Length: 207
Image 1 (cartoon, one colour):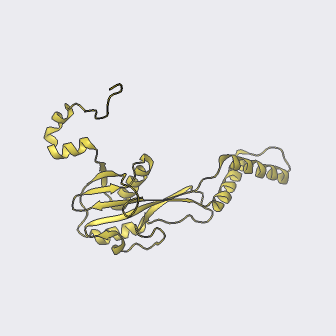
Image 2 (cartoon, rainbow, N blue to C red):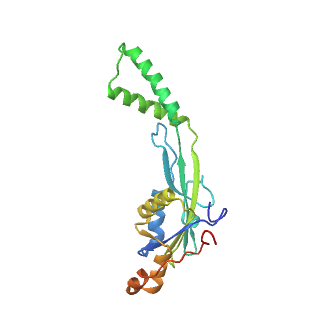
Image 3 (tube, rainbow, N blue to C red):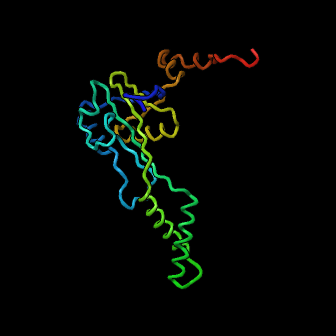
């Protein structure tokens, strides 16, 4: 969803701080370090995230000309998620525990043995699961210090903010109506804005 296709549901952010003079070299290295990497074999993670190009989610290389368009940085946050049905996971664990008890010749298993069995089962099942793939675009206008992120989901935005700040070393501030009004009016008018009474534009019930 985002820049090339899809709807225009997004959140806006102000970037707090300025890119370094040599941002092209620095950011190319930082983006490469935080680029998307697929699940490894025997990977116990259920989710992996990272940057990919807007034009191709499956091309791992991210040279400068794939993400810098004029003075705008365009990238896609790719989120791959694997889910194991909890009931199936429990049934498989019980089956493996029964096999373990039979092999060990005893009725009870220790907590450490149960944890080891659960870990083995989880790795085996995750290795067989095909992940769901999600890609959400972002555009950072360097001239305006403004970022557009094409999702309003809170969890996706939290994941995005963490990865953005880790990659670029700059914090993000959400641009909601009050923040935009404060930017326009200036910090010295903050008390005046605090006294503004919000207006309700939806029709009241019964009218």
